[in-house]
Image (cartoon, rainbow, N blue to C red; front, side, top):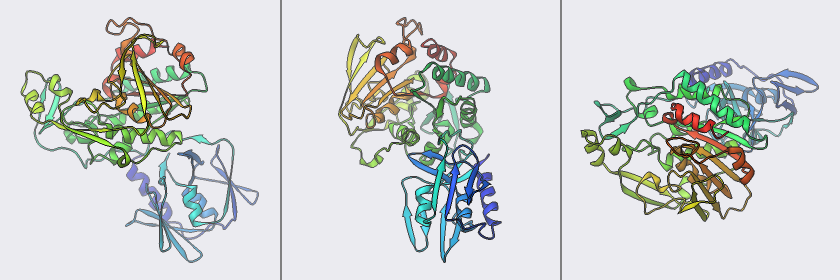
Amino acid sequence: MDIYKTIAVIAAAFTLTTGAVRAADAVTFNYNSKTARVDDETVETQGAPFLYANNIYVPVDDILKLTGFSLGWNGEKGAVTAYKNGTLSYIAVNSSVLEHGDAQKTFDVPTRIYKGVYYMPLVMFAEMSDASIYFEGTPERYRDLLTDTFVTDQYRLSGSANTYKGITIIGNCGMELLGITDSTAASYAAMVNSVANAMPPEVNVFNAAVPTACEFYAPKSLYTNQVGGIKKIYAALGERVVPINTVRPLMDHAAEKIFFNTDHHWTQRGAYYVYREFAGVQGFSVPALESFEKKDSWSHVGSFAGFTRGTYGESIMRSNPELLERFLPKYECQGAAYSDMYMKNKYASLQAVNTANNTYSCFMGGDCPVARFVTSNKNGRKLCIIKESYGIAFASWAINNYEEIYIIDPREFNGFNGHNQPFKLKTFYDLTGFNDLVIINYPGAMSGSGYRGSVLKML
């Protein structure tokens, strides 16, 4: 469902609500069905509660009506209005701010539209009411399939576009106009499912399909609708895989430098917003971006200069060096690169963020067959990441939440491009005992049968 249609449906539903349905002091919701129990009577609800970022989310319409609020809609604020006992509250869509009477309160998590239903965190409701809310059943892990996620045209570039060796340049901004076909979506989802099904049940498996800059900035005439392809991937993922919404956090921050102009990669800033989304699904917090120490370089010229070598496009790229932000982790860490899955053949020491390096490979030592980082964050968490180069900026943030991080590049094993070292993921799991597994890729890798095959050879 389009987000605008969803909000329109919400607005219509709440506009038509003329009064409270009942005024129960206690309501019991069921995690596993769209029902609630009030005074031994079972009633249908719009949606089932779920857990996200260690917060219980409940359907707004149901919890408010069942506890005696009169509901309406304020179009100017984009908010549900809830009235009870002389106090008017505004619960805005996709907002962490509650207006309750004359007071405003900001919460750690916002309201959300999920599966076409408007939800609020229980802590927000508790600010409005002292009704007793209970839950039964097993909570659902938040699996955002991007149903209500969209990309606007707000930041699209204008002007003439010229293409040099497959790289489209508009002004001084280069981009790859990559798409995700139906067959790519099906093949990539099947690959991710195969990895998840090969893992022991105690391993949490996540997939982050990351769009490129063209999704947010390409002129409308050149738009390739990567989000449509990502939705098809996520819809085909099995229950073992938790998809990470990569599109919404990037869209929300598209006014910032989340992608490079001269490089096909995203920035560490862009990766932060997606990592924070991943952390929220996991239930742990990430410090605010501005709290990290940062070392900037203004001399970055990225991969597009090489991709367009010998053309006027190369001259444009090299004439426009740009900002490379390097955010330093809050924990100390030691990293090493290995050429084998047993991590016996160490060939380099690595830094999480190398401030002497002005290229994208300043993050986690760049692309290595196997990289291992041990941090001073002694919480017992272990993360494994299967990736191409988009994964290294993402991994740089994991230093703040994991004790050990393993980064695997499947292109370096099992015969891919002549790299004949063997790698078996189950063997690696037995060796390391990682808790969480993230498979992260951008459309260029998703579309490559060679890349997908190299991952499947790890099983």
